[in-house]
Amino acid sequence: MLGFLAIASIALLGLVPQSQAIVVYTGWDRHALVGSEVRLYCSFFSWRWTSEDVTFSWSYRSDGSRDSISVFHYTGGMPYVDNKGPFRDRLEFIGNPRRRDGSILIRNLDYSDNGTFTCDAKNPPDIVGRPSSVRLMVYDKVPIRAGVITGAIIGSVLGLLILVVAIYYLMRFLVARRVFNISVSKLDKGKKGKGKEGSQQRQEAVLTSRPVLPRSMVPKLGFTFWGPRRESKGPVLYATLDQSSKLLKGVGSDKKKSGDSRKDKK
Image (spheres, rainbow, N blue to C red):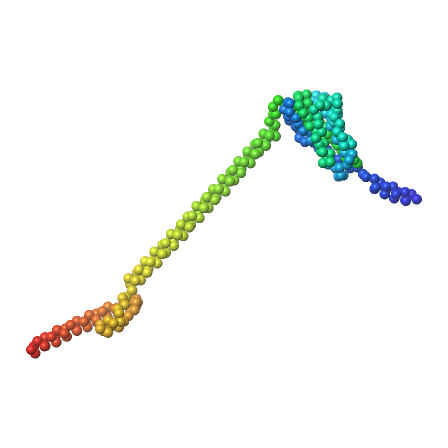
């Protein structure tokens, strides 16, 4: 019997929805000018779906004060603004509870509005969580915060680094392009030099080649036809030319002797 009751109690506890922690968060500290308006953002994180019973509550504590006063409350789908507080005519609910947004808008700011605003949200059954606070500071002129100065310095350093890297790669590109142009010009000069050497070699071959006589003149001169000269047969040309000159002289002398003999006979 006792075991049955224990099992039944465990089953009932499993059916009952268990509450989990809810995380509420607001934005950074806000700075605004006198007479302007400012939006105070508030949202939450919960493992549950957004309940119809979701609630948002805003409280305010002025600088130099220890006590907080309630200035706004949202529950049952209706917003409620405190009718006696310092923001009764200047506060407006601009959030969207379905999107877990409980933001408020405060208009016509004054120096007396400086203080801390605290937002608390509940999403039943998730109701356990710590509220989140944001500080509002009202000025005649919005001061330059240290974060802005730090961000500007970091941005300047990064920009300088990017510029240096860009110059480095540009110089590498220019040097590589210069080297490429020089190598191409050298290749062109080499090709032109080879062309000139080839033409000179061809001219030398033409000048050193042996002249070829027509075949019709070969029987008359009494020597044979030859082709281009070879280094090993150079003396043959001179010997042949000497023989041809002797033959021509012999033919001339024979003609003179025959002419003289004819004169003698007459």
